[in-house]
Amino acid sequence: QRQLLESGGGSVQAGGSLRLSCAASGYTFSSYPMGWFRQAPGKEREGVAFIDTDDSTTYADSVKGRFTISKDGAKKTLYLQMNSLKPEDTAMYSCAAVESWRRFRPRRVTDFPYWGQGTQVTVSS
Image 1 (cartoon, rainbow, N blue to C red):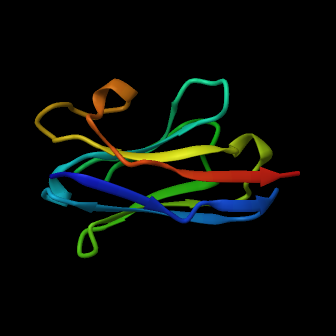
Image 2 (image 1 turned 135 degrees about the vertical axis):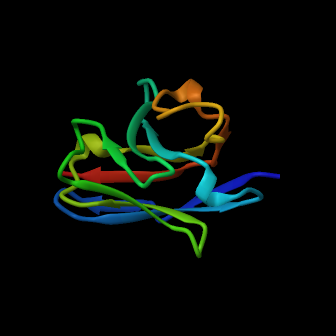
């Protein structure tokens, strides 16, 4: 049973930092591309950052230079380091995974069948 469990969310002031974690279990961690998505109230879920099985990374323009996605294979954990946070970064953040054979360079919400429950990030001005 594939499971993803996020942690690390919280409330910070603008300019602050947070590190989100996503603990994975029930599958071969290194074989699954993964991503971080976020959804603000009244808005659609959007992709934030992605990491593929070759460790290549992709970021949304809105977070480039501020967020860093990484993973630790030994711990089977995905991370999202968020620096220089802005109020517009406020959202529920979720990690997602997909088998590498399903999609090449998955980027869309619909590309990912496995999701965590999310962790809330609130940035105040």
